[in-house]
Length: 246
Image 1 (cartoon, rainbow, N blue to C red):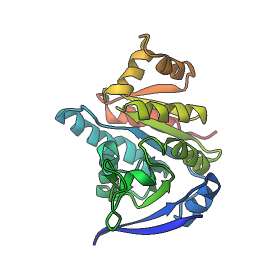
Image 2: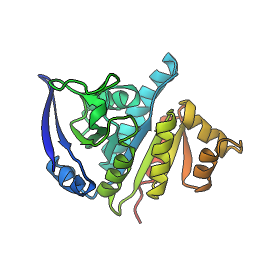
Image 3: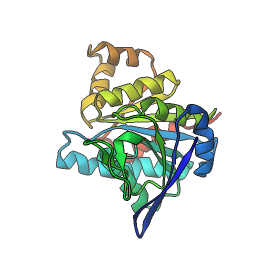
């Protein structure tokens, strides 16, 4: 069963949400939200914990000049965790400010989020990000419950077209997201210089011996790097190369 919600964030910001209970409803939910399929997909996972002011500002620029630029040029579908925090909020703002026509979807566990008119169901619930025009709400009461759904939804949208996961910063849930992406045969780009798990992947790719979970992911040869310190044009070139067809 699918439950549709119209979310009015303010007088200028409205979103549509489809709440589902089983994976058989994913395709119907996507169709009800007007998501074009198949489409090339970029999944954003991670966070912004521990980032200083300069790094955060650099990351905002990265989203505008690299991620949104690629999304516009290649008509990507962008998928995030959908909450009004960290990198999801940064990407939502960039998408709105630059009037990006690429579709932006938030995938969140229903029990972890709230929105105007809907009271939080838990003490640590987070608001949905108001610049995301579409959401899929999936079963779950804890952070990370959305991970398997997010990975599956990305693959459903892409079908046989290229898809890619971008890891920025991130902790244990982001590592789970990476593992699930790799299990779906989706390549992962870790943003070196953004901290935490992304930098651990950068270190492992440079030859450091880290945790077994990091090393197992690197051993798939599906993990590579972007660099937050690099020129936007170089990062954009690398990102776009993953979406070439033929």
